[in-house]
Length: 380
Image 1 (cartoon, rainbow, N blue to C red):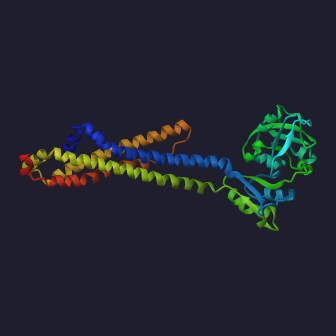
Image 2 (image 1 turned 135 degrees about the vertical axis):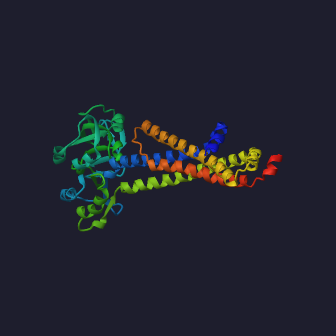
Image 3 (image 1 turned 90 degrees about the vertical axis):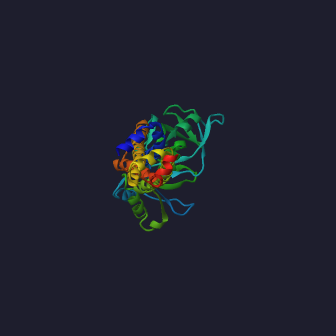
């Protein structure tokens, strides 16, 4: 081992170039596996926090609406895992909204979205001006609306308290909202109380929107049709997000498969690099090997020294690569504000893989070195 260390130390530049393939392979393995795990957990957490807590119920037959009354919503809200539920109506097409009745006044086309206080709570619009409607407006079928910011800008409405017209009917703008936590179709809509929409002559489709606790969406999705329409649950179509655990596993499997392929390619390059370097090293040291054989060195000693050299280069490359990959995962996670997820066993496996790469790469050159004839070597 001492002789192998001295031999490697005599040409540090060559040793670095020889080990760089293994270094890149180990770094690729650590970085990609670490980032895969970190990103998949991050994506799953974001998904679970937003989309994975939403269930939408519609009529299973196209062209029909899901008619649900308050007693149906009460049964739905009694299900374990349901936070809040509510009814909605929406126009299939955009309708004209005018600032005033005069034809010259600003107007725009926008869909109408009617939601009861429960559905409004599920969508959770961010109020920019004024306020949102509540149970009082729902009970009284008040002629009030909330405008999304794009609709308000097109109409020239900058504050609550003004009026807009749907057809010839005036509605008081009670609030202007920006973003919503769920159901992005609300971002370009005019929202009003569910009960108020019964006065509209425009055809509207109906659905039920449900917010669930994290992890309960799939369970609620299976039970909701029976709660809303117990006499005919098959008439209810349910849209629910995939289970977060399944989603996470899918992400991890896809990324891990790509990672392993890239890492194996990098390790293959490292193996070839070390093998080529070891073969060239033998040819440059034929006289030295012949002299050692003439002085009594055994073939197994020559074999062991050369194998130790390639194994040392592979180990050094693996350790440096593991450290480099760990640093990459930490830096990328810190830059994006993520919590890095690293498995120490993967780092140790990468270092061990570097050693194995060096060991395999040195087998053939070491066997060739043991077959060198001392007499022929000393004549060169």
